[in-house]
Image (cartoon, rainbow, N blue to C red; front, side):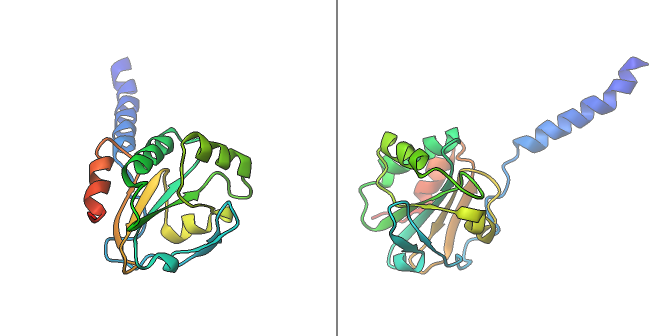
Length: 169
């Protein structure tokens, strides 16, 4: 009799674990959608707009300093795309809704030897505008401003998917 009373809980737990293993959609944009325009300052005080990069492919990366997968992805992006002048990797920090310590971001930038521009999404404006639901999330935007690719979490196959989404030189 005890087996039957515990069975529904076991099934519920199994379903919950199964659902948790399925990757969530990264954004509410689909390939071909025009990426939302924005204008923010980077952590060095420079103005950054999406339209300012219209002649280049943009890899927009939503990340946080506390996220281990974010560090993995940032290192991959640095090593793979760091020397390319035909594209821009733009890092959108998501550490806090209200305020983030600039020192924490610059410390990570320096530790990982990142040269990409970093903007802070204060109030999570871009998080909402792009429909982000997980970190890290990468969005590849073409020269025409249209979304090519979007994926959250940086899974084992993400490297290959990002390489396939970014045009070769």
